[in-house]
Length: 162
Image 1 (spheres, rainbow, N blue to C red):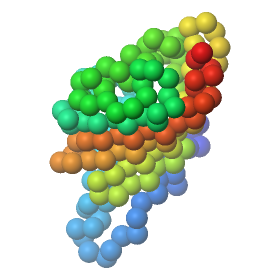
Image 2: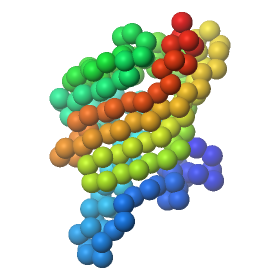
Image 3: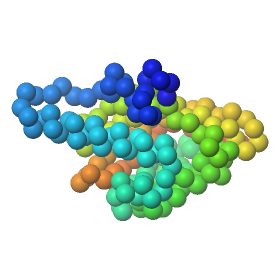
Image 4: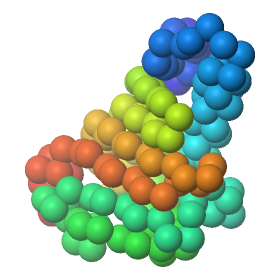
């Protein structure tokens, strides 16, 4: 992210949107813990580190990708290790290593959900520039991600990669 939006890759507080807080101490602690967890999730996705992703993925994780996405990504995928490998493999097979950048535009969260609006850019192995908007819904149970729902312009992606 540009410096005006982030420090060390973490969005500034003006870009974080959280529900109104009650005036009791428990609500504030819960919000702080949720915010910390959400920033950790975003950072680990950006880093693309399989080991660190698996630390936050539930073993029964479900990843829902729009039906219009290219094969083999369209549909429902299950299992933390399988999903991590699919996600990281998609990047590794399509883009020049190190060229992928994910800009976090907006992050919304509650106690058990995070919504992250992002823009992903990268250079393909044949030198083309890719740019697409993604929105992810992350659902948590016991501090781990149990479901990811991805929303992306599948038409653009399908045309770009065909």
